[in-house]
Image (cartoon, rainbow, N blue to C red; front, side, top):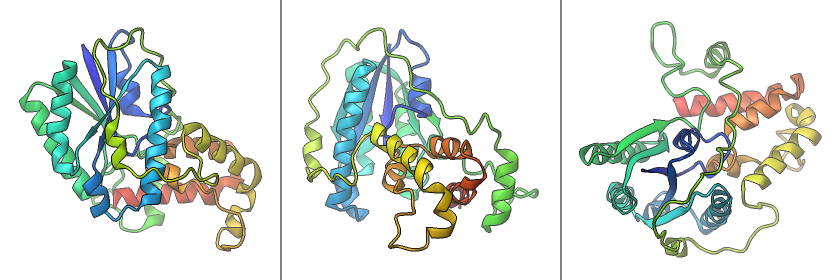
Length: 281
């Protein structure tokens, strides 16, 4: 049996709950899927620079997945409304009966995902939704009366109370598959729908590049972050936002690594909790 993993804004191997759980059975064949929503990207105001960065990260992900014997099937789905039919087509071609993906919380994305779950349920494909973008899923942190927080500081206090060290510990990279799927995976022509912008040395693509940037920030600048972050002329920030936004690095990886550096990381850790708060809101 084949299991599908649908990648979106989680273009990484490490600390990827959907990928990790899909790979729990080492004997199962796993196929990764990415749907290129070219029309939807433009409607959401995404420009060539971001889409070119997306393309380079997908190419890096494809190489990394190949080392785990997981092929990446890239398919066109110009609008989010096309996602369900595209995934069902791939499920039929691969004889997959299970689909794993990490939740996304904005309105259009949530509607797309509900439509996918309905379509899969109607055709016998089991959907497994995980939370790879946050450490505490939206709805888990609330006031005593069950109402959501609307102010950050009390949210942060409750988040810290509820967030155990185990929950803040990243998942590892899954073990390589024992065998490749028995099918022909099409070449990723839909990547041609993403602009091939020149690689920018300031923004190298890939999970390893993101991790090196995190390590550099923690080793050289985090001690000054709380004092210098508001001065644009000073190289004081982490410069990790594009990697966190695209899920090339998880917030949990960043939080866990920064927490290990001690009290000097407090201000930056607060920013990562703010990121959680924004998603809960």
